[in-house]
Each structure stands twice: as structure tokens, then as C-alpha cells.
Amino acid sequence: MLSKNSTLTLLTVTTVTAALLAGCGNSNNSDTANAGGTNAGATNTASADPSAQQVEFSFYFTGSENVKNLWDTIIPMFEKDHPNIKVKEVYIPSGTGAQPTYDRILAAKQAGKGSGGIDLYEDGLSNVTQGQKDDLWETLDPAKIGNLASVDANTMKDVSNLAIPYRSSAVVLAYNSEKVPTPPKTLDELFAWIKANPERFAYNDPSTGGAGSSFVTTTLYDKLPEDAIHNSDPSVEKEWDKGFDTLKDLGKYVYGKGIYPKKNQGTLDLLISGEVDMIPAWSDMALEQIGNGQLPATTKIAQITPGFNGGPTYLMVPKLSDKKDAVNEFLNFVLSPEAQAVVVTKMHGFPGIELSNMPQDIQDSFKGVAEGFRTFNIGDLGNEINKRWQSDVAAQ
Image (cartoon, rainbow, N blue to C red; front, side, top):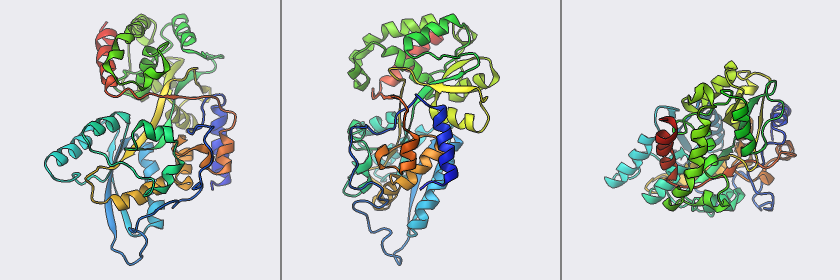
């Protein structure tokens, strides 16, 4: 359970997000039989025998410093309960390029050298889908990872059980409430606000961060059938024309009449300095920076309807790893309410397991929040969006 102070902190955070985000799990899913069980379901023998030889596996992950802080907290918790398993962290700071990690796994497979010494990998949906094509990822088995039963089955189906969505975040509007007393509630209202308030809105280059990518993608898929956001067929590209026309037209109204900052933090910095009044931002980054005082206390966040696309960060197990038993033990722990509570309090993120499996104080803290993000799964089309945005929007 969380401490009283941690709960108060979370309640303060969710007060800021009132009428914003929904818990990750669908509310119509019932509690599972494994709710609350750190070692629910089948477990492996890697940690069962105190006299057994210690197994070490390598875990590669990337992201901002808060991601490293998260794993620096969860991994010692796991190792304390599993003394015969050692997790070797390999952290790749954000902006230094995670693609070489994927390339290393693929190259090792092609050279007949197993998984290249990488036993667990964290990344986004694009590498889940690319790894599916390259046949890199192990299909995750609920019989070996009991707490998988606590994850939304539809989310697992979306990735063919090849990855675990261990935490989620949403893209939201972050805004200066002194300048924007009533934020837009829909995408059309947001477009109207941008035009009525020239150069007071910014979004980052979509190829450099998910917040800007979400704004662009949500614009392109506005008014398209709902199932389009789960369609990776290139035929949908012809439906983007209207959205790109909108983005081109907005260019003269955004910050600097067409300046697109690099990375998610680039637009947050503009909001911090007061150069703009509203941006799309990841909820966890905005909440963290509101909490630590980087963003002004007047900063609030809100979601539009239908929501910006957001979604999980995934953990993937290379199929050719020879440490899968130990990795499964770790994944089972990561999906426990104990570890997921750290995701909520330390990352300001949504738990990867359904909310009904979390301690009651965390469930209560999410009460009253409205519908949140939508999960898009459009495969390699995201790369095509970035290419066309560069030529049609940035280059104009």
C-alpha cells in the first residue's frame, strides 16, 4: 500500500487532472482472480531455491531521467524478494538513439548469436510492430506470467501478446490558466482558439517527440471512421489530405508563424517561459513539472473529446534470450500492484494493469476523471506521416 503522504500527493495530482483522464483498464472488465497477487499464477524456479545459482539478465531501456528513476526504484524491490535474480540495467538516455538496441537484437538473430545479450527491451509501439515483422519477440504466456491476467485483454490483443504495456500516458493540452480560463473541449475548438490567438500555441516536430506526433496524428484522423486508428494499410494515406491542409493552414498561426520546437521538452520550455499559452504535452511530463515547480502553478491540463492519441510503453522479451525464466519472474513483479503503485506515484502515469486490481486508495484517487486518450495502432504509417509532415508542413 502507499503511504499516507504518497496518497495525498497522488490526490493532489489528480485534482489537477480533474475531468481529464480515465484509468487504463476498461471499466466493464471485472476483477481478476489474481488481483493483488505479486506472484499470482505460475512462477518459475529461478528464485524458488535460496541455494540456487544467481541468474543475471540484461534489461535495455531508454527515456528521460524519470524513466531511469522508476527502474532504479522497482528493480531493487524485485531483487530484494528474488535474491537469485540480478537485473543488469542498461540505460540509454533520451535523445541518444534507441534504434541501435533494436538493430543489435536483429543483427544477433541474423548472425545466429542469440539475442545479442539483450534479455528485456523497453520501447514504443513502433518497435513492437517492427519486431513482429522481424520475428524478434517472444509470445508472452499467462501461464508463466500470472499477473498478465490483470492487463486489459484488448490491449494485449492489439500487440498479439508480444509485449507488456506496463505503464501508460496520455497527450493532453497543457495551458496557462491565467490566459486561458476555459480550454478548448474539442479539436475544432482548439483550431479556432489557435487562429484567434496567433503565435500563442506550439507543438513540437512530430518526428522528435510523441506530443507533437499526437497532435499531428489526431488532426489527420479527425472525422475518419474510428477503426482507422487501428489500420496499418497504406490505403488510408489518401484520407490524410484534409488533415494536412489543416496543418498547413495552421502554420501561420502557431508559434513563430511556423516554428516547431524539437522534442517534447521544447514546447514545455516555451510554456515555462510564457512565450506560448497552450501546447500538447504528455500528461506524465506535465504533471511532474507542475509538481516540482518547473511549470508555473497556473499551469493546468485538460483533454479534448475525442481524446488525443496516447498509450502504453511496452516491455518486450527477445525470442532468442536464454534468460526467459528469470525475465518472466521480473515481468510478473512489474505487473503486481506493488510495482504498479510506483508507476502511479513516481511517474504520474496510468498503471499498466486494470485499475480494479490496484489498492483502493489509488482507485479512489482516479474517481471522477473523464474519458482520456485513445490508443492508435497504425504500424509503419507513423513514419510516412512524419515524412509528409516535413515536406508539406515544415518546409512551406
